[in-house]
Length: 212
Image 1 (cartoon, one colour):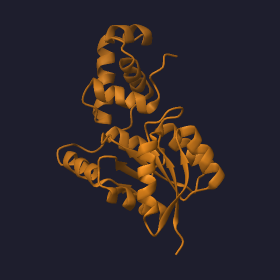
Image 2: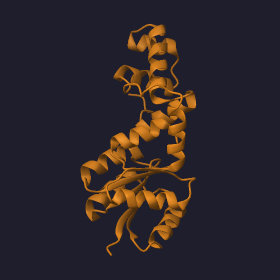
Image 3: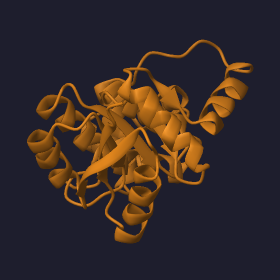
Image 4: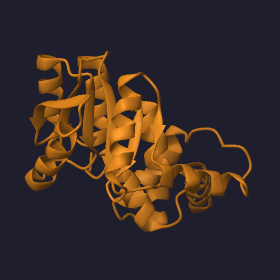
């Protein structure tokens, strides 16, 4: 039986080695490469063409979202399993939209990651059971998903994450403070964000936290 060839992309060496031991202990999979940042993950994937990349979404040089997009370009046949400690719906939506087949929480059991790798290798999506339970719980009380955020809504969120006040955002974008508040409310509702911490996390994921 051929083994699933896995590339590990995780910047913490201790965590990476633990994941390697777990994966290599499985009869149907093996680690064929390791990377300590997003840029190296893309380079390695291009060079060794793994079946699955297990990708920490909080890494230096290239964050997980950008790395996912770059991996889809560099190695289209490689499946991506995102590994994170964040269960936020916005994170899940962005990573899946970018091309990840799996989404697993670091705090979950090892069985979740192994199941995600096997599913991704077969071209099937896999969401951590804790994420699935949370999404199902929300869907019972929410209307159908709203459209994706507009460019103006994204810009308002980005400036908020950078610490700009509503009045300053209004002046920069040449809109009213009331309009800023509307864009903010709409974006937070669409992305299921519940406060400033969620906004900053989302901005980090998007790589927005740099002034133009």
